[in-house]
Image (cartoon, rainbow, N blue to C red):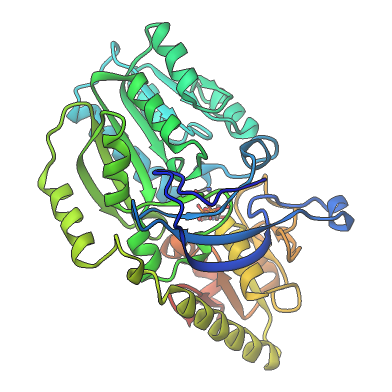
Length: 408
Ligand code: DWN
């Protein structure tokens, strides 16, 4: 593991501390029963701000091979809301860019084919690139050709050299995950046709801070982007952020439309101005974050403690990476939570990192009917509560932990 004391994007040395979440287990390193007795690797999780390019980032870089290859448990297709969100995005681009059998759509971190399948359906050639073995295999079974490897500037050179340049490049929830941010972006510039567009989704730092989404901080997420930091990053590689949309997905994200021709639209100018007005490019915007996160921890501990003192049984929903950060930072273990449920069959039968709470299938909720369910996957609260309507009808209640713990 490498600790970087200089900015990942601009190389500046004077990084300012924002939040220390202590030493934690890796958020997606779910354990088998056999592994429960083994030593579990833990890493410091410290968030810092670069006053030069205003990038919020973590200091530690856990090797990507450790994070994203073997046994990577995340499969995008276990969320219907995410599938709908991705289908709308693909169909919109197919229409806007008039894509057809002669086009090429590429997705970086294409996972189980959850998005590219929408292009395959209408006969548009695609290429997925993803280092995670399981999801890449799943993509191949649904007809989404996938290179099971990391996307790098070198791979982009190789593909371009083979005449495979893209009309559309999708990169959802991956730009924040790559250690060589500049190499990754230069690879996009190489692989993209001059007339092409890269459509990139990242969690938005302004929403993270304003809605106390501290649990979306974990070792997979090296950077937390503002439009200001992204605009500078892209321009450094001859790319231009021409359009931006703010989206509710994952607690608040940006969808970035990046091209090789500079035609910056009002959506970008407006957001860059908002960030200056709200001082998102200054350390003061981040100063009070640590205190607020500590307050959330105190409040959630108090709520769960009071319910347990009344003899209430509590389960949790969503063996999410953000769930691992939350339970380990707040100190929520099997004493408070009987089990976690998740639709993802690759997670069922395993245990949460750090706190080792068992992960079961959602049917367990009706079987055991605990009085309360803590929504660790709060970013899909509406979908999950709909799905669990019968549990609620029988008197079950939900606890939404972020931005402040509340019972619904
Ligand atoms: O960046 C990342 C984000 C985009 O996704 C990755 N590094 C990892 C992952 O983060 P996460 O695990 O916090 O993501 P989710 O999408 O919030 O995880 C939700 C979990 O809940 C998944 O394991 C699927 C599960 N789920 C479920 O069991 N039933 C989700 C829904 C919507 C459901 O109905």
